[in-house]
Image 1: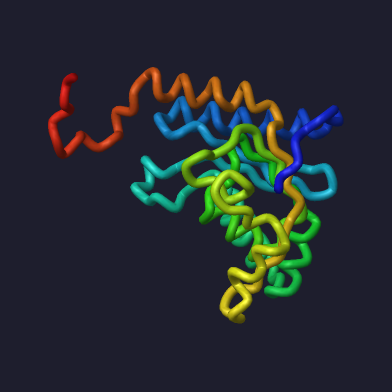
Image 2: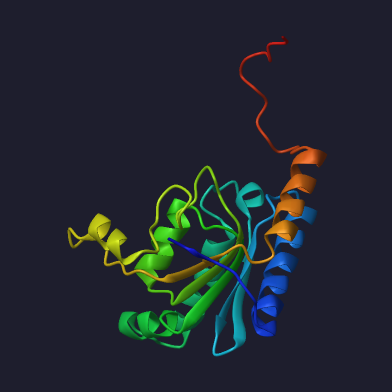
Length: 188
């Protein structure tokens, strides 16, 4: 299970503020307000925000955007798969909302060291809300030799009120990009 945040060190709060900035950027661009940063040795090395609407690609979550930035960067400098895995094992992710099942699986396969997240993802959460893909017992899901996965430490509840407030703002303004209902809404 993901552990809850207690007293947070200043650097942890600083990194989550940067993730919240990414979420605000997403909100300003009519995207679901989720943002993240990836940190190695106390330095932000990548950031991302949701881009599912603008790309019309449901996989372009904040985490996947940041991961792709790093993969491209590390491939350009000639790192092989083993070196990339070693780099990810020294990285922490700060994200405003619990990673979904897709993103939690990717983080597990990549071998991220630790994930800090704000609010829970009650519909699609992969770090405790629906599945616990961060736990080492989740390795059994990938034990057929197809996907090498390992657990990662996970801390929830970091600045969750601010993350929830961004979601409320998004849904209160309405999503102009949401598909129109196929059936008429039934009035009671």
